[in-house]
Image (cartoon, rainbow, N blue to C red):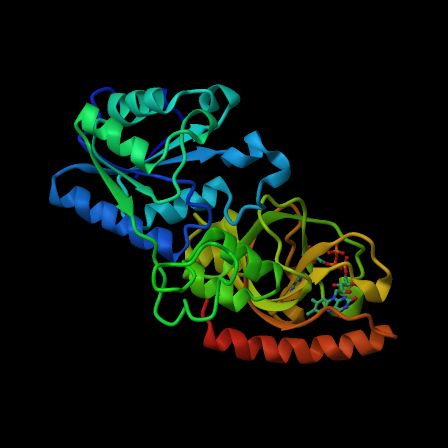
Length: 348
Ligand SMILES: Cc1cc2nc3c(=O)[nH]c(=O)nc-3n(C[C@H](O)[C@H](O)[C@H](O)COP(=O)(O)O)c2cc1C
Ligand SMILES: Nc1ncnc2c1ncn2[C@@H]1O[C@H](COP(=O)(O)OP(=O)(O)O)[C@@H](O)[C@H]1O
């Protein structure tokens, strides 16, 4: 898949193409399904399948206070977009300058000029161009002028997902269910429903970050935990979760190399919260890899870039009266964690 980080990187004369426009944060199952349809449409007409997306998220520039915490970093989003079979992704830097372009200019310069679009696909709520004046209807008019076809990307929700959800969210499908959406996934994660989020994402939510030093208490408790420094995506609600610790720096390593360094994907018990037992003030995400004490003695993750895949909530974070009581509960957490992960193999 070709990746372009600006209009100037698109090769001259590119096209014809079928283009999908969207933020695609999280690349959830709804996104993946429409993008696969875009790819199929492109293949059928001998055209290139291209997604056009923005970085940073337009709201982070236009209304930072209303900007949602993201589900995916750009790196991860591109990795997931590639899996849908797209030929190329154009990432437009979303600057005040780009935001000031009229819908007409946006379509003329991006869709027609750079990408040679035959077909442009966008969701029902798509907005582009100055003040969000560009909509699906505007796209249709401009398509008629420029000679490309405009296709409305239909909302997707899986069987049994619609019932009873979405009250008051204004996101109902025609049949009354709530459509799969990045905002729904965010709500689920904030409420601790990691399993519900994974169902919609098609994989567990991943938090990426660099391992930093904590209070150096974990080893003393018998539970060393890799603490994530600043992360660019949504951190699920406080609680103890089962999940996977993915060592991103070992992505290119052979299996043998990864094994000598302690393994690339490790089962993990995850704690998200302020560590109330120790009157902590900072909210932290930490992961204890279930590798045993012998392997732990050799494992050094400080400074490594890791992903923490949050699979399922085990329990809320609690304040314990003693360290012994916390450790006893952690022993039980680890047992339960192994059971959950046995039923949910790592996905990458
Ligand atoms: C499986 C697991 C469960 C945890 N549950 C709690 C909890 O319920 N309450 C709490 O205060 N801390 C909890 N913690 C966080 C520990 O307090 C924390 O990992 C420990 O203080 C070590 O911190 P450090 O990595 O900064 O040294 C949990 C940690 C793990 C790995
Ligand atoms: N099983 C393990 N899970 C997580 N980290 C481990 C493990 N074994 C060793 N480590 C290392 O120990 C560190 C955590 O030890 P800990 O005492 O909790 O210190 P800190 O408070 O700095 O996180 C991790 O950053 C990692 O380098």
